[in-house]
Length: 267
Image (cartoon, rainbow, N blue to C red):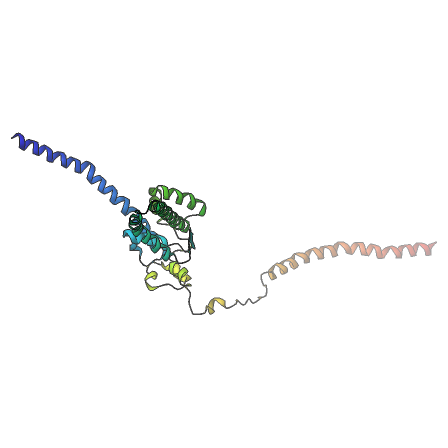
């Protein structure tokens, strides 16, 4: 009886450990992986990239982070416009570098030097990858400090992927293939381009209707005629009144010479 009781206690304690520690730990690991992947997926979709689902594949998501920005890639001895090559080099070195260096550790000090070189290389590539992606969706003054902090503390970068997932890339919403192929969209990328942005796609039809100049015809102004007529009508009584007032004065002036002449003749 005591043995059965001890077994039940042991099982119960194991269940408690699993529920309190292991399950939350598993959920935390899944959240730390899935949430940044959702952010990266939305960034790729808004950019117009035709394979945004690569964000949920561990190694492929590194490739996606490299290729989304349309920027020249330069760090250490890597200097190229083909960002997919930088992505492949980083992936191969991270997968095979440790194994190769472990085999070279038989040479004194050589393996240790390669260990340091490998760490410097991977950190530099990781920083440049983060900086270019942040610079694509954020201003330069914030991209630099966030990329450095994200390289030291990966959680900062993962949070930024979620924060930026509704932002527009610097080459325009849905314009990933437009920037890559001199303005040509692929059929798959067109699925991610909203209708309001498709008007920016290059077309072969000339815009003749929009280019026709407008012809303006000067029409005679008729609105002012009643005003002129009204002014004339208002002015006529004034001139008549002036004439009436002036007539006695003119008659008086004309009569003065006659009276003066009569006076002289009488004298």
